[in-house]
Length: 305
Image (cartoon, rainbow, N blue to C red; front, side):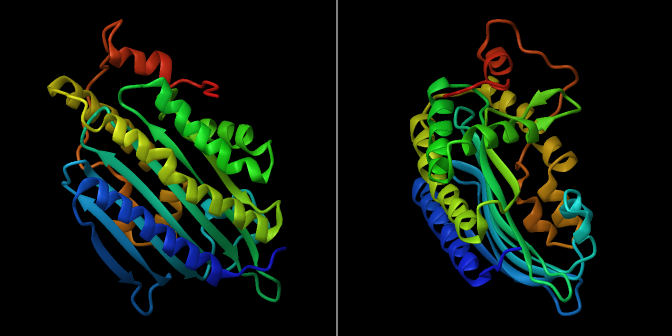
């Protein structure tokens, strides 16, 4: 049992969203749309949030970063699969979630999420846990990019114990896996869920460290690759691989399922979807091409550090 301080968590998450959106706007030279929302009275889920999204930019074809803070009368099944004793309890959930889909195929797509979920059982103290992480999905692989990203993840977790990076790296590889394709989604990163083992203060501290590490982990990769020339071939492969991203988000992603099952705001839940994607029947890249190298060298389980 932990005593939560939702105000402190909410203040941090709102500030994190503001910092990230400002960095994206500065990099792209465009202004994101800010869509504040509130659930209507009488809805099954009560709360509010802010969805910030930049679409059609010179750098980012779609970059969405959302904050939400909601309360509901009953935890959905996706939240209690590891805690059946809390089934049916009211809950509060808050988090920042983002997915950036760059225009240039040589710039990787990225996902990051940090969140807190609190079960509020009647007559008992709140039961709180944290989750989140970040992962990188390139279309054209660069080893130094993957190493930089994983090093930033490792360093963010180091104050919380040397075991955290290898443990959460494996968890990320396990989670961001398309079972129906027998294929990793990308080069991974870190992922954790239902986390409370350090106590409230230190678990929240670990969450802050992960959130603060996002911009240093990702933006240097954007600057390295944003001006790389590309043509129709690279663009077609990017759209094909984005189809895999859409498949994972709709079929396997626990966060998407939680949001839809709990009556969340569909537009905000699906901000992670790519603006354009494609599918082709049994498309296989020719041996020796950069596209083939993505499959053989990058979207496989590897120790990057």
